[in-house]
Length: 127
Image 1: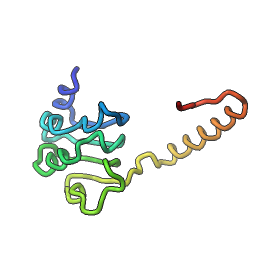
Image 2: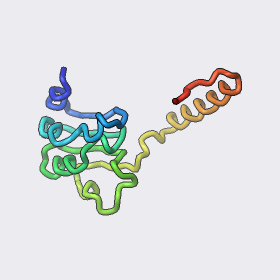
Image 3: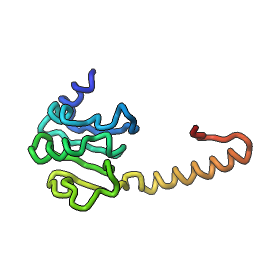
Image 4: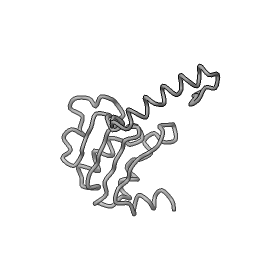
């Protein structure tokens, strides 16, 4: 199935991507035009993956039913940003990963990384 087909069939589009040159503004006007009027957009990945101007237009025009956003192209979201006045948008301050489970997993990974490094077998190495 092609991405365009998913946009037109999905009730909820939830974004889970890394930001790159290929994914920047990947969800834009064309995507919103393909979505159902009842569709919801959820973005907890990276703000710049969504074309925010196109999203604001889609929300204001009723092109999509709503959006739940935890990430933005500019953070914190600037005072007066049009998303603040969208009644069909739920906005959170980049806090989706702050659950007790996520915090505990991060702490366990940190301790494991230090122990592995000291033992001469580094883990979770990023180059």
